[in-house]
Length: 179
Image (cartoon, rainbow, N blue to C red; front, side):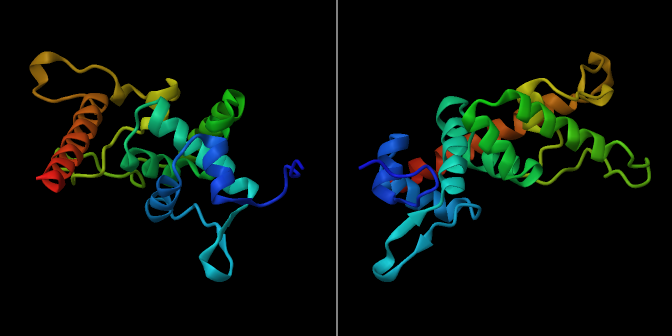
């Protein structure tokens, strides 16, 4: 018997539908606090349809687009759940609309209200937004190339180097666990 699209799904049903092992779903619950299945007696998980849609978007970004977990967490923080749900469903019109709305919300900021662009930046806070780079939307003049004699990297290049550093640190962590 086929379930209604609005019905809750067990972890095995979600794992089968998205071609993921169950342990990966449990792990993602620890990394993405937006995934909150309902738990019944005995710890059985029941995923709401919106949970499944969000997991589908997360899976797409991690497996198909090559994002790291930290990169997807940043996308969720900056753009919200609906952004990843739209990506998971392949709804590029909704993705573009969300990105444009976010751009419009950020546009009225005065120069005094904008965050400082220091050469000193904390590890874990790349200045360029991956979501905009990913879809080629909303690039400002500061994100473009810089003159070679200026001694500075463009915002895009800094963000790409920062993401590469994250990936290398994650690889090191995994290798240290194996040793």
